[in-house]
Structures are given as C-alpha cells and as structure tokens.
Length: 254
Image (cartoon, rainbow, N blue to C red; front, side, top):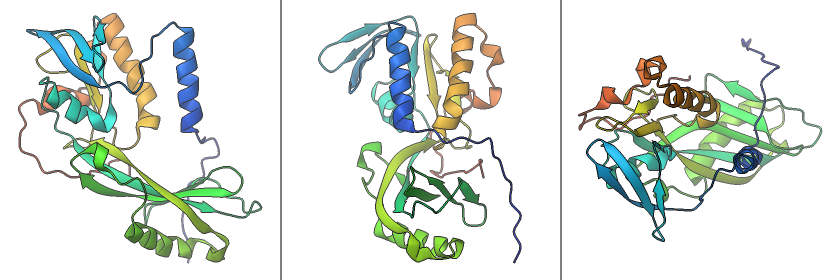
C-alpha cells in the first residue's frame, strides 16, 4: 500500500530540561527574582485590582500586573483564590520511552491515521505516544507512569510501523497533565472583572510550541496597552458566566 507523507526537514526537537535551564539563566541575568516550588495561598483584592499575592511562608509579592500561567494548575489556583471560574478541562497524556539500536536512524514522525508520534531521544532511545487523553479532576492526581492498557494498545499500533519490532523495547513510561477549554482554543488576556490580572491557559498539551509566541503577544499588550491586538478568539471573556459545560478534549491541532 502507498501512503502520502509530508517531509519538514527544518523542524527541530527541543530538550525541555535544557530549555528551562536556559530560561532560568536569562531571567537571572535580567535580575528577575525566581521563586520555585512556592504555593500561592491568598490574594489581596481591592474591587477590580489585585494588590498583592501571599505564598506559603508568608512571602508577599507586590506588583502592577499579575499573570496566571500555571498550566493545568491554573483552574484550581484561580478558583481557590476566588478570582474567576476558569472553565478548563484537565486531562493526562501518556508517552513511552523505548530503546533502539544506535544504527536505527529515525526522524520525528507523526501518523495521521493512528495519531502516533515518535521522536529520537539521544542515539539509543525513542519517545512514542499517540495523544491519548484521560480526563481527571485534580492535576496532582495524575499517574506517574504509563498505564498497562496504554502500553499494550500503543505497542500493537507501532508494530505495523517497524520492519522488525523486536529491535525496540519499552524502557519506561510517563504522563503529565494538560488543560483545554470548551472550544479547544487557548485563553489569553485580561481576566473578567479585573484590571490587572491576566490568564494564559488552555494550550492543549502544546505549550512548548505555542507559549513563546503567545507570551510575546501578552507582554506586548501589557507594555503598550495594546489589548485590541490580542486574538479575539482567545479572549477569556467568551467564557464569562459559563457554569455548565461538558468536559472533553478537542484536538484542533490534528
């Protein structure tokens, strides 16, 4: 059988751990204070303005603007602080790591029929997944390893994609929480009811690809007061007052 493929030789693979290290280094060079592993406990509000944020350990943060970009944890955080009812659905995606022979050359691939993707990780490993989404309530309750049924299902699907499937073996599996909105589009902009609080969420598991450009848009809007230049499709106010919605994952990217 014949298959049609699209070859994009200029695509790149980003090592997330190294990216975070690079971002941390840039921020420190800009004299930005970084507080990691910190839990926000409360906010001080004055009508439409957030005055300050307090964290565990009684540390207080004062600023002109507050951006909530906690990913899958945004919903719990914002609801708990009484800022807004963020209508996102939290779900878990899983992936597997396989060993492979060093002489097996594989470029990043995506198969539209089965939604399987694979990419090399170093010379002797592959990361393989298929975007399988499992809806959860609490982003802290996601499984820290791939589920057995997921491993079995993925293994069956990838066997058809290798000349000799016995050359690759499962090493480990992992999962992580993602967030999406009722219409599948991100939320980016001012939180309804506030003049200096902003939301950045609903990236649907594609944060590393979408976040840099969206963050630049938000900073531009903040610095230049250019809110009309933000995409209206992402406007958080489209969900203002929404209480009942069906939790589901809309994969607009595929």
